Length: 196
Image (cartoon, rainbow, N blue to C red; front, side, top):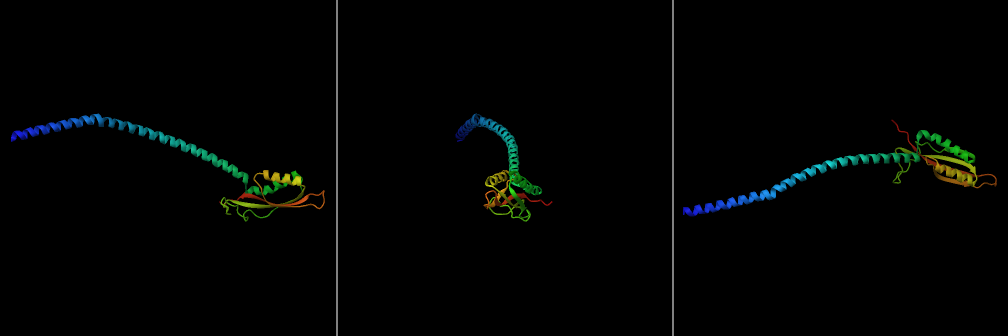
């Protein structure tokens, strides 16, 4: 019986040895190249990550530059529509000069309210309320012919900051030689004084 056990142990040892050789051969042929491929992929990943971070940083700088240019553009556009509180007194003088250039008669101008107590400028949603901008009302009356009125109105529309005509009323003149009487309410956006 001992010879049979010895024969089984030898066969079992040969099978184990053959399996071990096959496993070593499979490891060498299959897994070793995968390890090399894994190392190569890891190197490529590190390089791609470094490239991404550099590109991301450059893109952020470009975006910051583009956004700052856009902000400057919007601030310049805002200046077309809003006047500083300190410059609001000069606005009435500018309107008077425009009227004298157009040759309108019996010109008078007055402020209808104080910008600090005036109605707030409407917001984008249509609600009123503005922390930084108020609306200043100006009343203008003069006598002019139709061409003078149109020229005066055109000059006001081209003014910077933009003047808005809230309403106007033209009363026809009794005589042909005299100009028609015009009553006009203007509005302008004024930047409120910022308290320190």
